[in-house]
Image 1: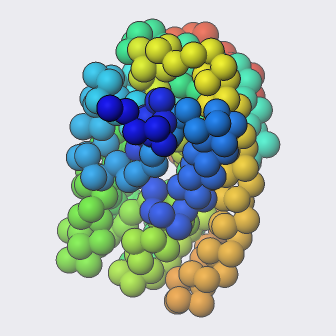
Image 2 (image 1 turned 180 degrees about the vertical axis):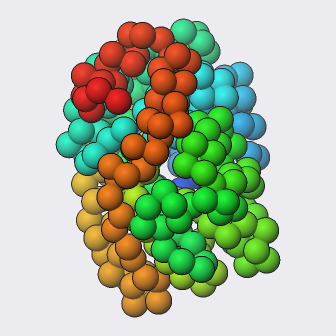
Length: 314
């Protein structure tokens, strides 16, 4: 016999952010609002992805329908949808205005179309923010490409990250996030790159001395859904989900801007020294290494055109 208080639809959404991160908080808020607006018919359970395995494991579970929704970086998603990595191109975006012009416009639409081609998953319209990524080091700040020559830097598992840092003269090494702190502590690598929120969460300031605000890559989380699971919902429930999840993304973006300001102040107090290099020097190095020409050849012309429409010629 069905529990009278049980929701008619109970779905799960996974993410990899800590419980204090704006992404988790806004997802939880959206879940509560969805439940109210559907009069208890829909229950969206929010939980950390690491309870289910690696990001690639959870992506597989979303594709199969074992998990209903999953928040995932477009660059990491590129292991399944190669063209989703285009938004992570090194030094493409100069600021947030440019990011949202692209991701809420033609480039975002292009990427969502590429994701939809898989048939098993789709992406909601508004992408969530993970922030601009910064480089931290243990021995000296990175004030220009010359300071990266031969530096062993940890990168996530993605051809885009590896290609970027090789073109800048560094020695990128793929290491899982759960081994990041220990790899820096034991000097397996000398440097790493992540948004400021990750530096704080993982306490990387304990094993790194300098943070260079390179803004070398913008990263965001697509809210991916299992197509069959979403299509199985009544249209009115779909509309409520879409409304509140997209609104949550917009609120989370504002939260992260405020968080990054406070985090810089907090990390400075913890001993991290900040440097502000010129992005143009890194872009010149990448152009000379053929980085942009290489990736232009890998992405569809339609996607590259949408990227340059927002950021200018690369």
